[in-house]
Length: 253
Image 1: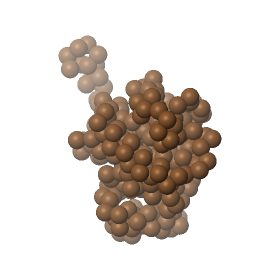
Image 2: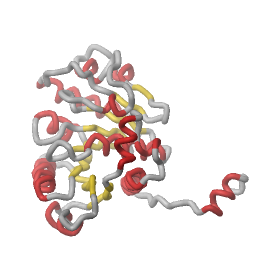
Image 3: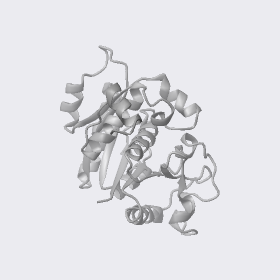
């Protein structure tokens, strides 16, 4: 059954878009059909992450009902599909909220997983993505301010009757000054989907305009995102042994 996930956060700078990009890319690596939609219409970044900062047709045109949905879908070399938003789209209209819900439902007819990269915070754009989703994934950093803002986002989502699938903790440096995982889980009262460490491989991937899943598949960040995607799918990602890889190479597995 197809599902729409809103990737959101209580504040900016948590690594929300990076998380949306890499969860989508990791799901695609598991041979799942994925579409990542940039619903951060005022300050879109999905196109930048995939090397397509400006496209002739975008979500903006779909929201304006000037093109068909299929025309705004672009496929990355990896097979991950994206719907960028225009950098020049600078006004969110009331009808956009209803249209996005309709777009999300239409996408469920053509893809298995729809990832909505939400705007940060609790404004109209973030609310629009949450309203259009089946489940919510909240991105936070392991500090009191970020976790408190995440709590506000979770409360809003629950008040709307949305299921909060869990929390992704990003930019973890494993320092004593950070909130402990137990404390974060107790405060937010939702499952922790995974912990993504601070990793230079993420900045490298952004410079290469690709997901870290593809640019540095063996990095700590890439493995963390693969584990998160596996958890979303109800699978366990297992590292293949050298023996397994040899058998696979000679065609015995």
